[in-house]
Image (tube, rainbow, N blue to C red; front, side, top):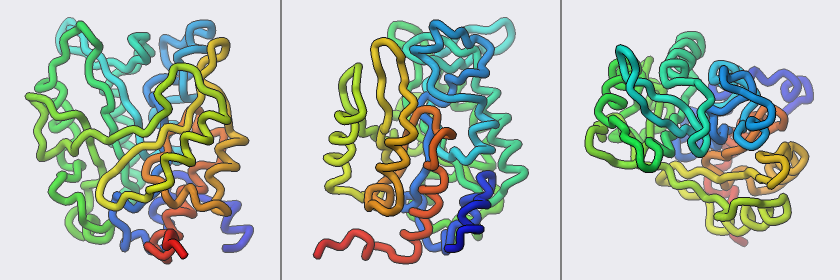
Length: 293
């Protein structure tokens, strides 16, 4: 791989430029993910003081897609609107005032321009404790707006090449916890998240957690999400680009063991480039990457 090739990665079309990607299943790809994707600094309700503890990304869904993100960690609440109900994004109840329609528009417009890219919509949390959530309406909105683009779970084991031959439109995985009102033809099972189960974490604790989590990886039959984030009492979500660049460089074997790498402020580091390289390596070398001596 030449220096010029490395320097000119097209982040809008990086998946289409993965070497031999047609040989991979979606569960083989290494996905750059955005933690709490609906909470960003350009959101209508962004406020510096509160945002310091709740904001996890730098800009909108469309911007995240254009900068290479392909897996979105999404947390939605629900409220009654004057005409239609509103599904809104939140972080522990704090609303960004971004809504589901914005995500749908961003994804649709992006795929119109980049039909060989694939996207994971990980609806990790639907509803807020003690408040109602209309799963059937949520399902109906997504199926009506995105139905022709959704990869059914029955196609989960097809390779990228097979998926492309099956449909020129179906490029979206939607995943959520099973609930009455959600059509399992369209929704894949909930994506498990491997995260350090404590409120405040530093980088040394996170590194140890990642090392332990990846000991038995990769897992070849399902999508899963590695949370590579830290959170402090004074600063909220932390900017840890140096550590991310160190830990997930392709000079180590961590990145090729991952599925979705879920991080804050993803654009500040080289995670998209590393996922592109790692996915290419997996297509070329397959299981031999992780064979034990």
